[in-house]
Length: 228
Image 1: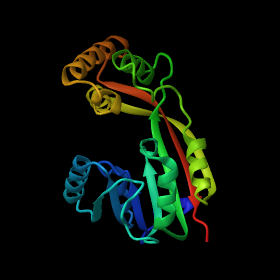
Image 2: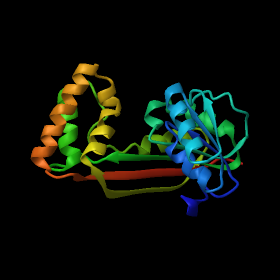
Image 3: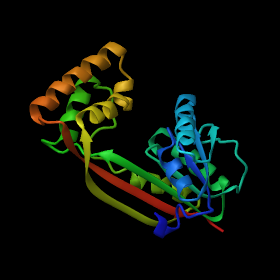
């Protein structure tokens, strides 16, 4: 991303859909002037606490991605990571264009587990779907084309796309925690979520014994430039 001009020191950067600020804090650590925006008060509270704990300066802003209320042409870069699927993509792209200076950059990225057969990710996703059949974000997806369509429709010119796969190590506890806070499980009642977690713990112990796991993931990104 840095080679593409995203995340360089001194940039005014908006991390849209920032959640608990994982990327916002990393950009701040690189010397960017960062605003993290999210619609969820709880996420922003956690983000603020984590930033304070690490001594990083980030401005936090509660707003929807489609109508941030932030000043026009006030950012050099906008990033949106692991969140675009929650937005009205066309409206969000128009809002990003309004927020960026001429020639500014937008980077839309994702980090998704790959539900391959006989892997931690695949076995877990099968269990998720059994407990929450209405969840429709499973499978091996490629959100990139739709994202690029939204950006192009708002006048952006896509300058780079990339995708790569990586095996990510987790402890058993950290993997269970990651899945417990995923949208598919947060949609369940407390009792149903607990039943899912107990079954997941048993499946992991049976299929992948030990204290550590390796889960395949896919990273994808599209970077575009705002028109002059």
